[in-house]
Amino acid sequence: MKKNIAIIMGGYSSEYEISLKSGQVVFSELENTDFNVYQVHIFRDKWVLVIDDVEYPINKHDFSTIINSKKITFDCVFNAIHGTPGEDGKLLAYLELLGIPHTSAPFYQMALTFNKRDTLSVVRAYGINVATSVYLDKGDKIDATKIINKVGLPCFVKPNKAGSSFGISKVYDKDNLHLAIDKAFQEDSEILIESFLDGTEVSVGVIEYNKKIEVLPITEIVSDNDFFDYEAKYLGESQEITPARISEEEKVKVEEVAKKVYKVLNMKGFSRSEYILVNGEPYFLELNSVPGLTKESILPQQAAVAGITLKDLFLNAVRQALDSF
Image 1 (spheres, helix red, strand yellow):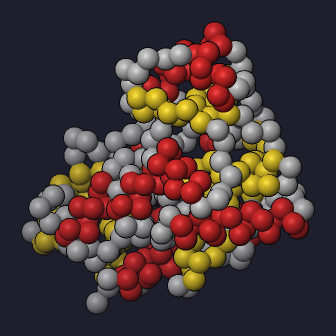
Image 2: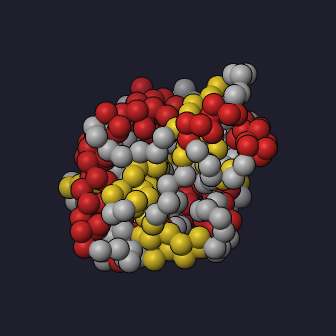
């Protein structure tokens, strides 16, 4: 008997449209396989299973629905939600309470890696290079001079818990720091201000594949804009070069650090982490636990270079989730 797989997508953050695209790609790749797959849209005002534009409400008591008088339950959930409540662990804690397997790391690891400040604190303790940073809560007194004296200029201002470069600014002078802080606070009540790292930016996918931790080919990011912002990520205003044009020594260092970060943070399933190579040394920026999953997204590009098709990538995630419970 075929198992039922719910592909959850959407979410409550600014990334919901990107998540819907990722989820649709996952659905398309898994549709004609040994599983029954369903698209489940998760929004603040509704949780619904969608078939041919018809919506069937999800019963939140047991994550089920009724289709043609038949109750549908799910054997596994494929998490394609970028941002809250899928990437920050909230929805995964709910699924774990219900005993439903999912394709992401356990809820605590997801919550940790969604919080940039806490993630940086953990990896820093293991000797991994990170940028100098300042952390602010909404309502804190802002001393621009003190901040700049610590992180220098230019610097980056970013929401602590947001993705897809929403709310991020690169600041070159003191006069624009407050504007950048206000922009970041529109996305989150906590923000991070980091020193600028001058070097080559690379992105590294680390996944569980065939029950082993595998580092995918490294991607070099060359943005047409001032940094790898939303337009560069999603509107074609960047070059994503896989494999990266870095030396063998740099490649080995990045792979070692990326694998160490994955293990230190107790990750499972998909991850994509970002680094800046400064004088040949990798500096960790952040980790995405639900990276983009469209064909144009970085991790699928890396998988393709490694000889892994999207279908194999997604089937592997579902099978590992089922095997883990």
